[in-house]
Image (cartoon, rainbow, N blue to C red; front, side, top):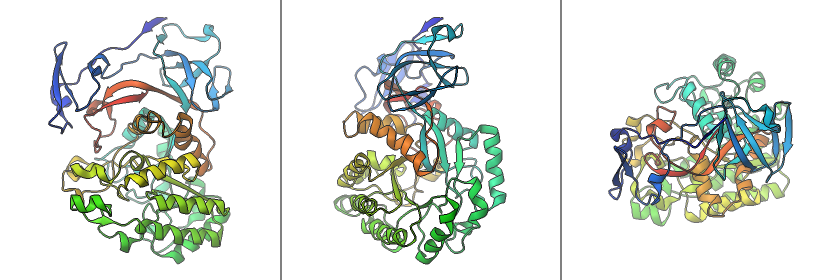
Length: 470
């Protein structure tokens, strides 16, 4: 066995400059390479590796477990509790095993001696968008699977708005082939209505065995149709996921209505566009008793409505997206189209209420809502840019820095919302302890670090602290 600490790698100058927008950025020279440092980057950034090239198999020593779960060993599986300290072997296929007997370590295994690395259950993303089929130029299945693995996600729910939509058995044949080739990482949602047009229900009984649940991934205005879908789904044992939004009130809004929408001169989106729709949908749950998940919540009032529904014993769960926990409407001063979301970013008080909702259990899960967009699609004015941003490879380190480092959430609370709770929302078994995360690792978000062809993220070109190791 040999000790291994990592090595320096520098991207070409043209690649390093890509994505930096701040005039405050500086260029420094080190070992025959130019490195561009973003504004407010750590003073010791150049003392950290830009890309860590770990050789596998690798043994990570003295790893602390973030949350309770089961873990693979050579002999089978064992239960571990939060706070346990173990040695973790990662093989050439990036599979994680707990080492109980040092004699089981293969020859030529690299020993990684970096303190502070953590082990958690595999993350589960409730909903994201796949470029393929239909928009392979944005992102292929292979790239999406790699992005999920790079980001520590064991499962990713795929929204049905692919082309063709996932609204019949024929469309599901594509996803069966994907799972045969890549395993069960990508899990499709089935459409509630044919063609996602909000007019006619799909044959949900036929789709149910092959999907994780049903959603149209956009607001449904016809409440009678929603009621029929809830009643139809009850005996099938699959959740329905609804995006609460009153389309008339939301019309044209790209930023939360208020102080910053006025200051930035952008069309406001009133909080009532979400809460009025959510209140009506909760009443349908009260009527039908159908297990329902509410996705993309973004307001403080929505947290209160969900908490009350849970107190009333209604079978509801809820999620928000990672960007709504890390940003607010004030951050749109740059008019960055990569922060154009649906629903738009809320106020700072909304953001803090969502975080408090995760802590209290009103909000069950954090979704990534990974949405690849081509470069030319996003190089347009903010108000006409398509909504969405990539995030599978970025979410865990950025959430950690924004929520755990700042002590707004504990490490266990964050991991619960990223892994165990979303699995429960989908009726899945809890993933095994399989994600290694180094919260102290400094790296640069460059083209080479992102698996997707699409790079639509406001974090491109920025230095981050924290990275999934395996």
